[in-house]
Length: 276
Image (cartoon, rainbow, N blue to C red):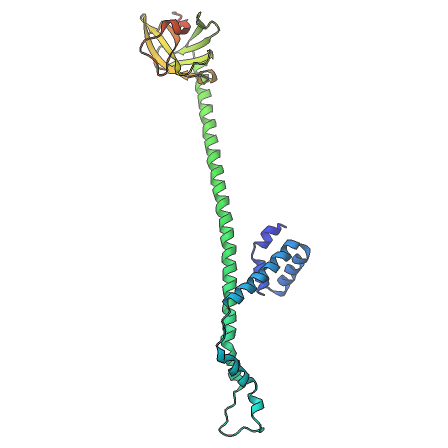
């Protein structure tokens, strides 16, 4: 049994105010004997209830004591066994009726205590439920983001597989030039759709403020095919700008954002298109 849940269930408050059956009272007492936490909670509730009752108690009027004493000793004041005709004797029913306001006051105090404890208990439960709901929502959001990311990666892998396995794409191997002999990349180009994909296999990291730029040689003129950063190109295919009637592709290192014309002495790799 979870003792914390048992304590927060509200049964202990009902026990303290006597709002349980005999069997339920016995069960709580057995739990208090078995678990120190339950016994401590009950003792603390007794203290709290007593403090609340004292704070809400009403101070009787100064003449209340004198009137009460007069009523208590009224039988002693009457000397004869039979009352005189004009004597006024307080009937038993009247005495009980005078106790009613005090009983009502005590009941109102107990009701106020019960309401305060119940409100505090339900507020604590509401707070915990709200925290658990917030955690569940956050977890669901993280799962949704992870799911979307996995789906996106899957779509990219599927698209890449279609490209590299399709006979509609020409494969152009790009080899390193004297600036960077170890550099390599592969171009997948579809002459019909003009789609171009770049797969960087090896390129040095670009210095700060620099960016790699792909060029297509079209009828002897370099045409901008887009800029890219590492390591994005190393992880898979990069979709570049569409190109028509290319005879070769090259990669240069340019200022970030690219240029309208390539820097020839900063050309890292070059590959020519195999004409059928």
